[in-house]
Amino acid sequence: MPAFIRKWFWLGCGVVGIGAIIVALLASGWLGFRLFQLEWTSQGQTDLRMREAAIPFENRTDISDHTGSLPFMAGIVIDIDGDFRDEVFLGGGRGQADGLVRYDDAMGAFIDISADHQLSKATDDATMGGAAIDVNGDGTADLLVARESGIWLYLNHGGHLSGARLPLAIDPTTTPVSIALGDVNNDGRVDFYVSGYLRNALVEGQTVFNRPYGGFSHLFLNVGGLRWEDATRAYGLWRQHNTFTAVFADLDNDSDSDLVVAQDTGVVETYENTGAPPFRRIANPSVNSYPMGIAAGDFDGDGLLDLYFSNVGHTLPRQLLRGDLPSDAPFNPDYMLFQNAGQLAFRDVAAERSAARIGFGWGVVSADMDLDGWEDLIIAQNYAKFGQPAIIHRYSGRILQNYAGARFRPVEQTAGAANPLFAISPLVGDFNGDQLPDLVWANLRGPARAFINVTPGRHGIAIRLDNDATTLNARVLVEVGGRTLTRQIVANQGLSAGQSAKLMIGLGAAARAERLSVVFPDGRTISTDNVVAGSVLDMRRARP
Image (cartoon, rainbow, N blue to C red; front, side, top):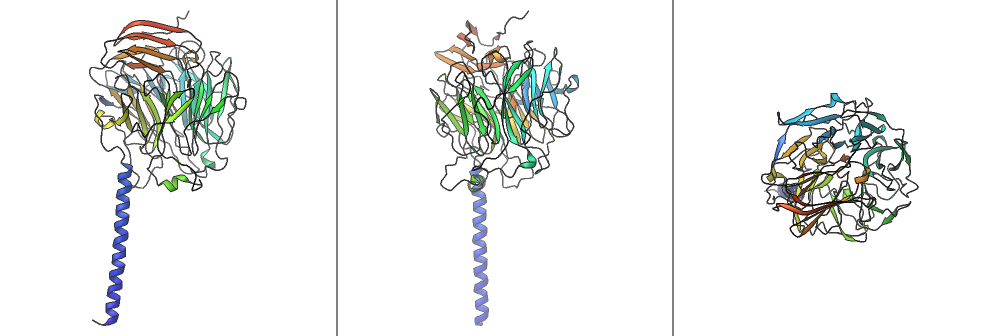
């Protein structure tokens, strides 16, 4: 063989070999990346069983860069007619009407009841978030809605909703995304915090950590007569930053509304309510990350409220997620579980409880789905950029069952409630009136999905309280089988969401609870003894 042929032969072999190595590396990298995303490939043991029920609403949001809306949609659980069965409000995109649905027993599915209400909106106006609460004190739940155009209030007139936009000034660079309900000054009136995100037309990117960037959030205090005043600066909360959501919660059991804020490209911010403005910011274990949804519950059974936060997980490359952070700056893509140690001290135990390494998430909610006496976690998942490359794994949403406070394990596949769509928030309520917690996935640009709880042999206690400012952050204590179960009324868990005002507390295998007490923020306590499993307690105030 001539020398020049041998030369080109071996050169060709080298090129082919190098190409093969590159292909192999890419293939292994892709496989590794996919497997790395498949955190929690196995399901835990559970008795939880869910049955899908059709729901006639499909969100049509356009999140095109700069021209579309932000990737959020409202999902609100509300008992409109006071029959102790929840309805669901779902936000529409630009040019799309909002939806209001109710479960129909005869059909075994949800029906559209939007035409029975006056839920008007601007034609080109996406509905971002909201909450349900009795604002005017008439004993019925009203609806607060955050839209691109501002904050809207729909009053409940005997089971019929109608209203208009409130005259509240939102920073013009900002889209209101979520509404958190509280009673900041304990005057018995509904206050609220509006989480704000930079308008989509102004968004430069999602990984900006090191400079003031984003929209502005607002705290509005109720001054009576369905009027609210901006108290953001007075309470030390005015700053420029993109914010996904917030909750008011009593973190130290002193009967007032503290504030927890989830920031995009930042940290979790926790604020103590000291009884007078301003709030006092307190330390927590958060470092630079993407805290999004917030769930609040007593996950370890010690009587103190813990906090759980969704994050981006490992769906995308870590270096991309770090954005403009310096190489030596701390960064955490994992989910976070702040265990409350008392006296406003927290420790992140997500890894210890097997609840940290989870794919890209949005809203998170706590609820005892199987009524075993331990609060579980429900997580909305998936990345919001439609048309994403196939390498990005599409998750099924998570129901993390709480195994006696020691660890969590996913059970959504076994339970029959998987949701491989782009979900913004889970919504938990009792839609068929059987005192079992049901589930709706509020999906972005796609059909909402509902799952009715059909778990056999499960009983708890259902409690009906006044859905107004007087019950926000009230604590419910249930003594059963040598344990004291603690539940707190936290209205706006999830993301862009409002959860059911109906409290469903599981008793596990117990036939009764020895004692049930409700401790209200104003100091009142209502107690009752020997409550039989399956009971429905109406603990609302008598009204003239």
